[in-house]
Image (cartoon, rainbow, N blue to C red; front, top):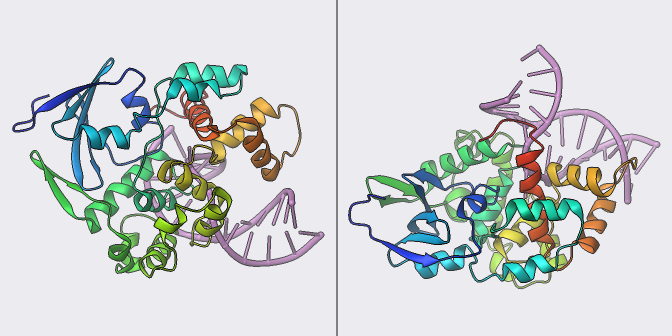
Length: 287
DNA sequence: CTCCAGGTTCCGG
DNA sequence: CCGGAACATGGA
């Protein structure tokens, strides 16, 4: 990659697939540049490029990148906990190397509030629009990247102004949640120390946050690998594969099954089933 | 035009 | 507890 003034450091990443990881619907702000990607990890601009087992990282950010992409997660040990069934094995073959990212919790929470009833492409657009409109610009190479606005920054924006980012009914929820966090009504730091069930209940007090989004925050923001978000895609997978032919399988039943069946790293299993289904059940065109 | 998208909330059985 | 409907917006 030719980026003036930015050197690259090579690190060995045998069990890692950068592209799968960035395109699996966990994060929505990374941009394709040259042969790789640029994005912010908190407020640090990072460039990444992968060639088989070698990851090229902008100089000096190896630790930051290793932590963000959870390169310390023992994937083979995690795979060994997956249930041994055809659908799971197929998803594993397809997604091998996909890692669950350690996201900044607020950014993760806010982004998933905007994700309700939206396609991934739209979530990306809203994310960039919110960042550009209300976030802090950070220069990288010849352009600017924008940090995700802090709770206080979004709480200070009117709902009307937030709607210019095409959030629709989600604007009210995002603003309301930002205000509660900014006021200290809910402290994400404290929630991160609570056990799964209590943490989910606490997050569900926020407007626009229900069981699914709360589980996303636990899984992607708080490193709770057992958390199992059930969206329309995973709902389809569970019903088609594990409850085939049964009528009226309730949401509660799916939730109970997913917690029992997929084990201590159910969140990983969920992400693999989700991405595999999206990419092979072809409901719509590629992105 | 119609349908659906990584849902949540409210309301009536 | 459960099923339905409303909620904004844009792409297929």
